[in-house]
Length: 325
Image (cartoon, rainbow, N blue to C red; front, top):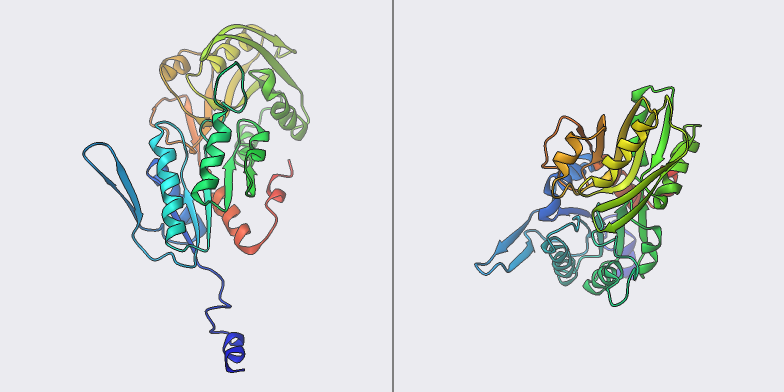
C-alpha cells in the first residue's frame, strides 16, 4: 500500500518522462550542435579515443541510464563513420539507455539496395542488419535513395523529406516560369511531386551509364523552352549527371537551370564540374559537411527539421503531417 502511494506521487521517478539526450558522432558534429540548439538542449558530451594503429573507441561522458538517446551521425565515407555509429549504439545499450534512436541524415550505402549484377552485396540491407544487431530502437533518415530501404529494418523508420527545407527557398526565387526536371527516370516521382505542389510541369532526362560516375548518353523528354528549370536529385557525387543534364536543358532553350540536391557528397572533380557547368546554382543541405567552397553552392540547414521531428516523437505527435506535400 505504501509503495502504491509512493508510485502515485508526482515526484515518483517511475512516473517521470524519460530525459532526452542528443549526441553527435564525429562526422556530423556541427549539425548535431545545431539540432540540439534548435531543440533547446545542450549537445551531449561524448569523446572518441584514437589509437596509434587507427582503432578508435567512442564513449559517452555523462550518465544516460534510463534516458531517450538520439545519436546524430551520417554514414558517408569513410566507413569509420558507420562503425562509430554502431559503437555508439552498442555503448548506449550497455549504459542502460531507455531507447536509442539513430538519426542518420545521410544513409550511406543506400545506392546498393539491390543486386544489379551477379555476386554483389546488397549493402543497404547489410547496414540495416548491423544497426539492428547493435541495438537501435528507431531510425530517422532523410531522403533515402530508395523508399523500399525502410523495409530492410525490423524497427520503426521515420523517413523525412528535404522538401520542407527546399520549398521555402524555392518560393523566395519568385520564378513565374518555373518547371522541374529529373536527371534520370528514377527521380520521376520526386519531380512530379514538386510540379504538382507548384502547379507546373516537369521533364525527364533519360541517361545511360557506361560505368559508375560516368554518363555515356543522355536525352531530354519534355519542353523547357523559356523556362526556369530546377533539377531535383537526392545525391550529387561527382556532379557529372547534373552538369550533363543542365547542359542539355540549356541547349533546348531553357532560360536558367538550378540543381536542388539533398545529399552533397561532392567527390572527385565535383568542384570543377559544377563551376564549369551551365548550372546557375547548386542548392544542397548540410546532411554531409560541405567543405567544397564555390560561389555556385548554397547550403540549407536541416537542423530545425530534425529538431522538430525529435520534439514530435517525444510528444507522440504526427510526423507525416510535416510532409503533406
